[in-house]
Image (cartoon, rainbow, N blue to C red):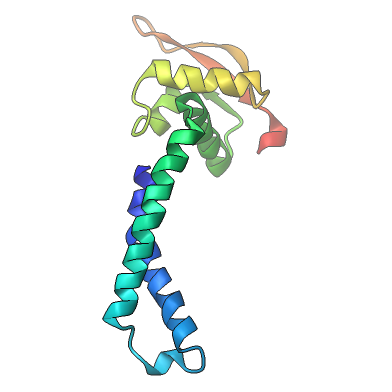
Length: 140
C-alpha cells in the first residue's frame, strides 16, 4: 500500500485537472483550477484510498511473489544470464533484507521455470557458498 499511497498526491492533482477540463471543456487553459475543484478531487481521492485499503486486504499479497517479481525485474533490467543467490540479495535487500526471503522468491521463480540451479559457487576459504542460477533465456 505504501507505493500506492505515495502516488496519491499526484493522482489527486490529476483528478483536479480532469474535473477542471470537464467543467471548462471549451477553454480549460483560460481558467485557474478553483479551490472547490481541488476539494472535490481530494474527496474523491479519500474515497479511492478507502477502496484501495479493502482491495489490498482482499488480494492477500504474497511476499514470496513480490520478492520473485523484484528479482525478475532486476534480471530483465540488467539482462542477467547467470547470478548467485547472494547477487540477488545484494540487488533487492532494500525491500527483502534476509536471505530466507530471497530464497523463497528464488524457489518460486524456479518452480515456474524462470530460473534453474546450475552449481554452487564457493567464495573462498572461510566464506559461505552461494547457489548459482541460470536465467531462462525466454524470460529476458
